[in-house]
Length: 168
Image (tube, helix red, strand yellow):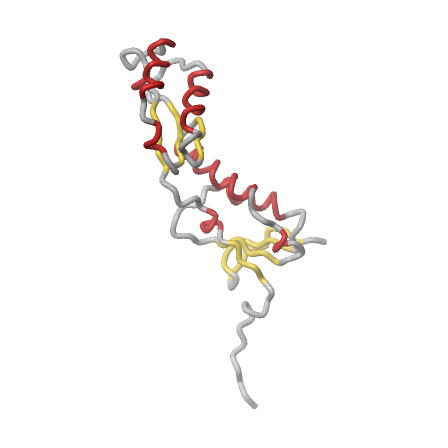
């Protein structure tokens, strides 16, 4: 009798989804509004608009931008809107917030645009280990997206998973 080794993971029908592969590879930049303020303290509309008008927005070509202000001052909402309006013609993505907010947005955006057809009625393992940090929000978003369509969702590696959801 022959003792052959059977790879049960390979024959299990599990589909591994690596969230790290959804990571947008483009550079992330935090863009501080404080240099556009009067003496780096408060916003004067005319000065702000002049500085925005002469700024070289092309430096953000194909990058992901988080727009924030490093000083504790009141920035009107329209000021952020003006900056976004200039950046969007160059950047891949631009948000108002921190670099962490940007990372969360990029993963949420990638998951929202993921073709889910391949996961219908499948057993899915959300890969647990990655070389780059995958934000926690991505795990919630992928679970929310897959739960209505998947046969089951697990977390970890195919050889060692934690069950998350199983269709009844």
